[in-house]
Length: 391
Image (cartoon, rainbow, N blue to C red; front, side):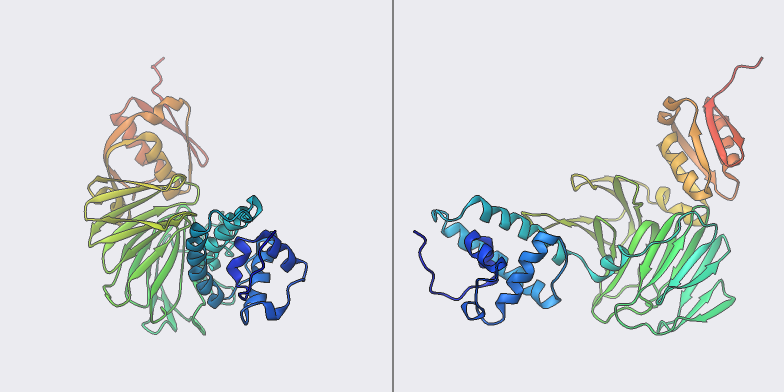
């Protein structure tokens, strides 16, 4: 027989008592049987587990953080209690998963998940709060924010007012393939955005933190401010810096996220897992960190940072790179399709200097002069194939 409990119910009790959880869902638990204010919180949690919806306020998330840890410790001490059934264990797993997802996301990440833009445009978009879109036609644009975030200068010619920027509102810049942009934020940090990239940021940072969200590739030159660390969030990785220069490549279609540190120091923070906290990895200058999204592992190696950051200055310095990886970078940079008629050519290795001020066809033709390949172009498609024997 189940022993009656004399203590008031708390929200974490739904994780260990499936009978109690069922009674709560059926409305058979009275308000006075709970600690004051707990009944609605517990009901919301059970509903969210069933409906997979986010239904909690910030205070409830913080409170649940502490409660779940205490609940886990208690369950360790009462393992012998027979009524801890498989159904209760399932509640623990689902409840913890939901909580970690809710608790681990920031406001800017939530906003980023709602931003939907066209990717096939041939101009850069600056999207202000209220979905006001500024169209920027130049291939290499420059966007400068005033210190108070109220004014924006575009390409040293056009000045606009950013409008009201309450805390929690964000600007978005979308750079299509074939174009690039430089953004000087209100804290004087500089961000060079490569082709096919999206950056989300506030016009003016909140007092306690500086936080931006990146999808794509960008070179960051972060203004030092020890009291307000700078955080770059991606879909799977967070980079924390105080003041430094680094390149972050985090395209949504890639299976890895690459971080190259030129100088300063950064800390990589992985996604929170179900049974452990967030993994961290520190970097020193001259290192490349490759974060594998699927298994959340990091591999670091020594590199020449200029090989990864020179794109902002209009050239590439390549050392033992595969033709496939080079073609992928050039395809994004020039917004052209590059195909291999002979797939094995993608594994060929190339080292050298490429001037990106030339066209994509000219750049690939320079490679063909050194390697046993040739390039042919038809409209916006460039094909790489083995050199044909002369007739």
